[in-house]
Amino acid sequence: MIVLKWLFLTISPCDAAEPWQLGSQDAATPIMQGIIDLHHDIFFFLILILVFVLWILVRALWHFHYKKNAIPQRIVHGTTIEILRTIFPSIISMFIAIPSFALLYSMDEVVVDPAITIKAIGHQWYRTYEYSDYNSSDEQSLTFDSYMIPEEDLELGQSRLLEVDNRVVVPAKTHLRIIVTSADVPHSWAVPSSGVKCDAVPGRLNQISILVQREGVYYGQCSEICGTNHAFTRAPGNIGRLLSPLWLSRTTRGASHPRSKLLQRAAGAVGSRGARQ
Amino acid sequence: MEDEIELKTAPADFRFPTTNQTRHCFTRYIEFHRCTTAKGEESNDCERFAKYYRALCPGEWVEKWNEQRESGTFPGPL
Image (tube, rainbow over all chains, first blue to last red; front, side, top):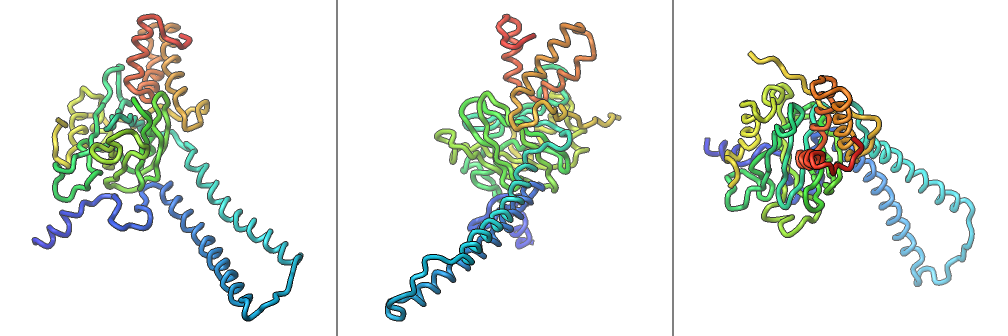
């Protein structure tokens, strides 16, 4: 029992970076899956080129060593090799460019109408989130601040510099529109497992659309140097806890509705911390 | 028993196909206020524009613009 507890309860089921991790975090959105696939595609050509170039280099060093081959043959022109070394690299760069552009433009495109709009507003050094799809007046937004939990307040199993007091709760398998902006200096809203990194610029609204495929807790940090506390004491971590669409539709009814209080509470539930001090 | 709420927000707009949605929010705000001046405050036709701009604009911006409209310093064409 103790072992079970130790095994499962200390490892939070979340998508955060691991110590000494080499690759990307597990993909949660089709975009991130595309990024990972593209990385692997390109790596194939990268290894191919690396091996080929190394082979040529070592071979040249071996065969044209001054002791072995004191007076090498002087070749100044070779049509065949020149054609080959022009055509092959261009074919390779096409193999890299085509999937790369395909991914790039698909990331940009908003194909369907989103179901929910969430506004992520960067501050020094926290984030404010607004859900206002169900407002019937200008003041009713469901708004909450998301602060990082300082190191000394962490509970067992929580990730240092990642855990926040109020998580963003979004439905899974739903098209989301995230409007990213800032209220003071430039920030950047980034969630690695969603394949999202979007600059938050004051006075500008940047839109990203994501579709989260599986439920989980996703972590991210500010990705734009935004002042003293950018990286440490209060990095604007943003966390999505993803639940079914039905759940959100039942909970969001404008800020006045008691059920939206539930949403706010649920957003901060895992840390089981109330309002921030 | 509560009825189910439809998940609905401002649709994608072909006038604003890019990542930058600043104008989208501003335009929807103006559209709403033009609509209310044309059709009157009570008209329900304008409600959808209000939903759109509330979904897109940060609360702080809307607050500022409302104040500017009251004091007559709003920069947009109303």
